[in-house]
Image 1 (cartoon, rainbow, N blue to C red):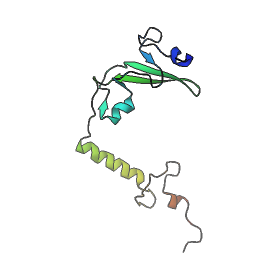
Image 2 (image 1 turned 45 degrees about the vertical axis):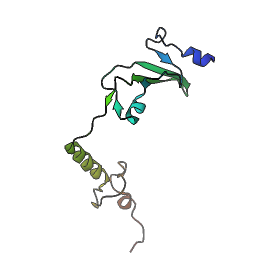
Image 3 (image 1 turned 180 degrees about the vertical axis):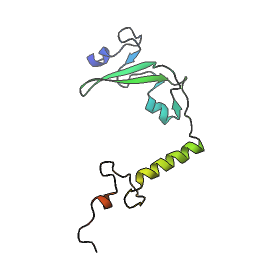
Length: 124
């Protein structure tokens, strides 16, 4: 075991307070939030069960792990929530100046679509 891996190996949690593993060294049964989301799960209110530590740019990095068997299925949006999300995304794509719904989100820095912000010179 390398020195870096040995520095982050604390499966009992005596050094860091919770069980700690090195990069790609966590045992089966633990998952990050992204891994849970990819599996259609969510933490479901459970506390952080363990962590992964590794050396990264700017110092040590951490990823928190949750127990897979305690995870719950992801919640689905209601039809009313889906309508609200669709309306909000359409509003982000609608130009305030010309009123056209664009295939991209209107840049907040411009406040209008690119065609209105930068009209072509000499267009007839």
